[in-house]
Image 1: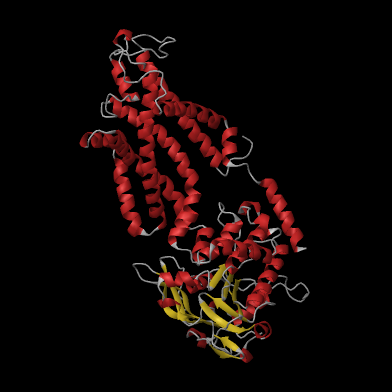
Image 2 (image 1 turned 90 degrees about the vertical axis):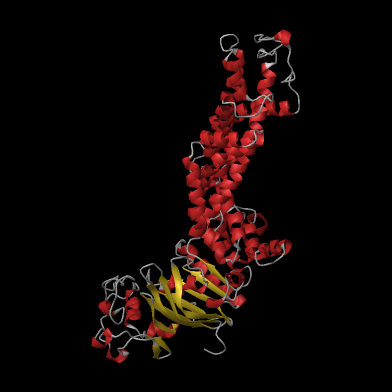
Length: 296
Length: 325
């Protein structure tokens, strides 16, 4: 009798169960397009890292200066005869490296800070939130500019500068959910069971905010790519001669009348990548949202 | 009571602390529980019963705090233990099951892993914990434990989840189980199954159990003694038979009179106690039940103390023989 009732309950519940998040992601339009666009760019960047570009991105070929797009040079050449396609792809790789390092740093630091600010009392919360608010008050580009000019200009400095700018976002995004999770019955239950605080935080609270962190990482990646491009465009980004999307646009500024492709190519790559990441972020958010149905 | 008590609470007070002073919510609760004994703590919402239980486990969150009293558990004075020592007791020596099984499991962890974690957190090896978690799931009558251990909570019904919660609470064979209204959120048909299951396991493991409830009917058949709380005070503490047949406090009598009795045609279907319990912020002079009490008289302006009465204790100045009907 007992078993019967329980078994019926289980079957009913089974019928209600939802598809896993990744399958719901593939079913949504924005998710699919986002994966496709970011995938193309990521594969190209990976190829560039492995040296699989059609030409050496910094090799100059003076004879072939300012050639338009052609079967030989897909995106044309710049004023030194360097292949714009190879440089764009290598530039994505550089920009992406900076963005990934920056966002990883800020995600890890910001999430841990958000966890502790949400979970612990005012002695931890107050200083964390104070620092967060101060960082929030800085215009992102300005803080990155200051840091990039104050320290040696390597790609890592740029990454750290961008990371600092994005830490507060992760603190804010994670602290709210942690506050409500702290009061949830299963976290209280974990305390009743005598679990140590570290186990409660890392084993029970963190996994439940991970979807939020993943979505935020995707969106922050796109902003970080933009910030890196902006810094390079202002001459404070990845140092030359390493190609960077921002400095390519800067170089192309003077040539805009002569060779539109030198500006169009890196610009198009930036737009494709940022749009792709944003769509992917939207798709992920919908896929993780427990309120979204299975219809999409 | 016979033999040393497992749990002995003396004059336990809980207050909400603030800069303007303490607001006392639980006013000096005393209770005792022998090994394997079952006790029901009954009272209306806000009578301080759940707060008292949280205080027992030293889990009050600020601004709530224990302001006085002594909690002796198995020879330890819980009020003087460090947080670390307390953590070792929680889950292994004292466990709790709660009202709402829908929210008391981690939605992202498999059921089996959650049962096992209750043991690994207290030093049981992983393989051993895994093996015992399957036994436990089978013991709480969850069908096909091998398979269900791999399920997530959302795949379970309310009754099944409560069974899993029970398995988790009992994983370390605690000596004291606190059941805080464990059936309130369940369907009536499931309630009886869960009550019977807990009662059976309690006997099997010889656990002392405290049932926290506002439903006298639920516990009447399975407890040894009942403690009645009103507005943060224990007003009566008596063996279950005496409590039902010869209540020693007017509040207990009113509670019993309020139980629906469909066979008695001579009285209205639902009897109420007039008025409402005082809020912690409202000072009642003397006995806290005085404003609602049919027996109240001049003597009640002085706060009564819990004194032996018949086979139990009650906090009332008026002898039962002098009660008006």
